[in-house]
Image 1: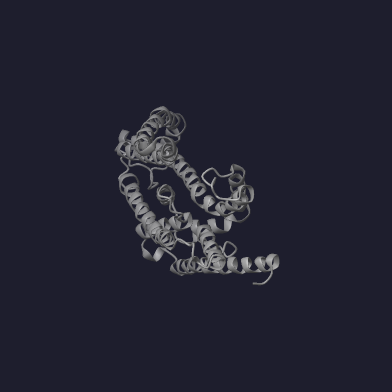
Image 2 (image 1 turned 60 degrees about the vertical axis):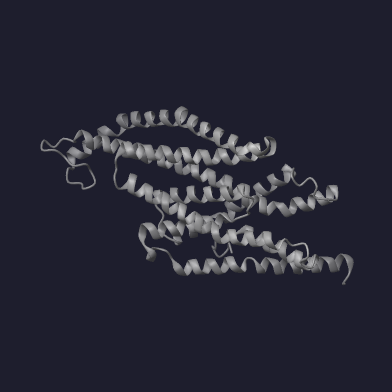
Length: 351
């Protein structure tokens, strides 16, 4: 699928292969079908949820930042998104910690500490950063802006002039606010990309490494009793495999999601990253092995429809991806079942 640039799901492949093995080795008796149904349901729910969240975020960014261009209001909204992104990241870590050590009240500790941590970041780092960007703008950009305005007053995207040909004060302030907000949005998009990487590691890497950890524990201990504390070297092994895969094959899928499905702009990219990472982390906290790919594609399609209309999304590519997602379950199941039968025959003889 990656060779043909289709963003398929590693979660689908792993679960499909696991079910295929279970059907042959255990004759389906120990497969938890209810849990499997919940997982399959989450595969449908997750892209829809991520798409709705992405559409909401994109609508807010478009209507309160891009179109209105009110620096103070835009800055408040950007700060809120910073707070939200940091809160989600901290909560996902603290929730796991307190759920293991603090009993039934862990969620309250997680929420309170995440709120204070987000506020602390905003106070200690974000506001000094805003002040620095404003000073940098005044030092490096405003003089150049005035020179361009006075020498080429006919350029349409520059602020309007008053009767004396000077730049009005509120226009300079609007330009200043736009510059600061643009820089903050760029940094925020980097943060949300890190959030998404964290979510990807917490969900997809876990799905991929889980079978290997099971084999290792059975080999070492004879049971899965210590699965709650897996071998960190095996997890690191999976993370290294992820990094190598991104380096050598990631460009093909990046091109499909970032270019071929629909047009992506900075605002669109921020909406997609933040919504998909939030959805994946939320589903992971609920214990559902959903697909980061599904969430990303769902967010991309929703934002494309919202900003550019239904015709902006490549429906043929979308249908091809859907078919690829569907067959990524039975094909791994068939390969897994066949491989198990062959290995069992070679080791124990034909039964």
